[in-house]
Image (tube, rainbow, N blue to C red):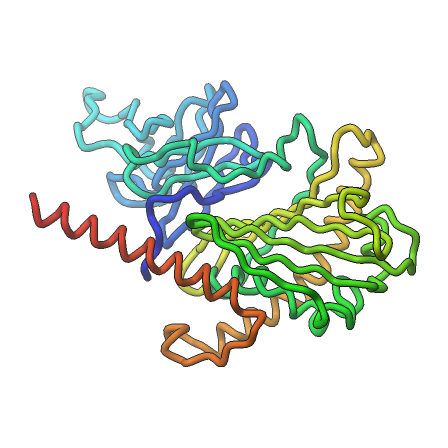
Length: 354
């Protein structure tokens, strides 16, 4: 399986990695263990002891919070990946007793991991999800694990024409197929823009949009994709005929990280300004609970059925029929394919020169 290695992926919500605990997670086919030290700083290490290769995540975080102790023979590894304690013999630490440390940055309510060479990791390249900055936003957070390829997840969000048919009672209506749509690309960033007109939305959406139930509205759903698989929805509505700036803008992140070639970690959220006070916090909780229902009971089964039908076959090799709504998803796939090909060519060139 080819992944884009030199990129930032989400490894966890910030709150998933708590004190005095280890979190095991497979990312891009690589087993990783995450933990926080005594100062609260998060670390990510390869989840494999170099002595007898057992998962470090089956061990324990030492009482001082500064190292993981392997459950098998008691070697201890700090957040740097270096072995810092050998309880055997004279206590000398073998030079090779170290594990890979992955660059990890805590930002926008997430822990972002770099799976490529550490020296290439630039935190400035983390995509902008400041709408999840906990200092300024109430963030509702959800997580699902999908038995489907991560690009199928990306396709699903970039082509929201499906919400009329897959989510008729929660997210879609018969106005969706009549929406005005537009595709944009800015560098490696792809935008899918969708605007409905004179729509009666499902009841669930009116609270998020701060509009009276049943009002006829113009709704926008704009999606930003940044490689490899991080998407941000800008969604809102106004009374029909009113300008967009009069509506409430809702931010909904959809963050995908491949677990394996046929499984994906899926973090999704919704944000409301801290200026709304307790009402915004309550709305974030209510809306994320409501969104989980269609995501888990409608999207997830459909994507997993897709994966079962595809098996291990390449997506393009199956010659999929394309519709107008597929334009943004196809563009994103082309961009990602190009980035992976460039990365592989650079690696091959570097190895040739050695």
